[in-house]
Amino acid sequence: MDSDGYPEQEDFDELAKLDSMTEKDAFALLEKKFNHCGSGRTKKYKTFSDYPRNKIIDVIEVHLGGWSGCEAMMEYIQTNCHIFWIMYWYSEIVGGHYVFHGG
Image (cartoon, rainbow, N blue to C red):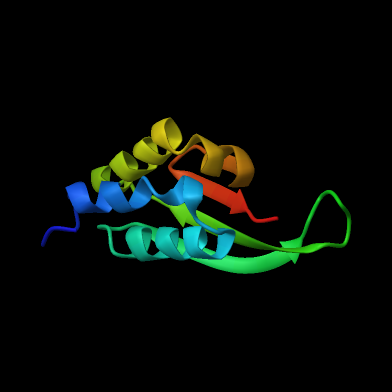
């Protein structure tokens, strides 16, 4: 990130590796990138899965905070990290709120 919290090329290069990372490493990278990007924030916790029932899974919420740097990184993930997106994306809410569920 630059001094204003905007992503630089090396940040996008790191995000490009999401498709080949383990769930734990991928969620850790999201925490690292979005907690240090302008007003972006993440929240990580465990919950029960919808299916199969009663399985405890990791969840990470990413809140972009209206920061264009965060929006650029999320757009990059959506358009370039297809395996990550298909495996973990759960929902998004208007206003830049994304939820990813682990397996």
